[in-house]
Length: 207
Image (cartoon, rainbow, N blue to C red):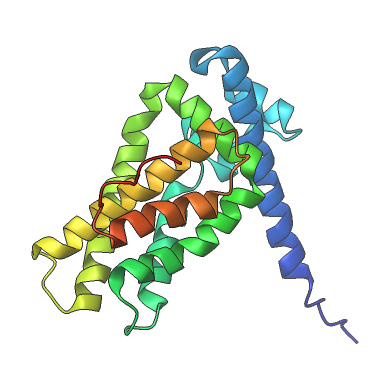
């Protein structure tokens, strides 16, 4: 009689794949932070992660992709989360709600994200890849926002909301990185979104 496969097996495989991907990304970021982008090879990254170069290419097409991570996948997941927020929730609040899982993931991988932000800042050559991914994500977000509020994607509101919320999130991330991750990213994002909701009124005097 053939034994039934363990139902936990697929989960274990997926977990190992995520661990290997994270190990490769971490190795790439650390080596590039130490030596510079041009001084690090795929072979060195693979060795630091204790895998073969062939395994590296099963996860990333290049060292640059290992450095920026799965931005396209993460962006697509985020846009899908926005679409899943109940339609009665206003669009601005829906985007903030969908960001909760993104923020939790970033907080859980704080050191990796802080290192990634440092490496990208130090190596502007990586920015075009991020811009391309960001542009694709923005187009998808505009479509989702337009559907939520019942207007055409060509209407100004979906583009404006997508742009300003993206800027608010980036501002919170930069403040988080500047504080070395010691402040709560969720609190910083809340602060930025509260400012948007209030119409970007001038802040009160410091007390």
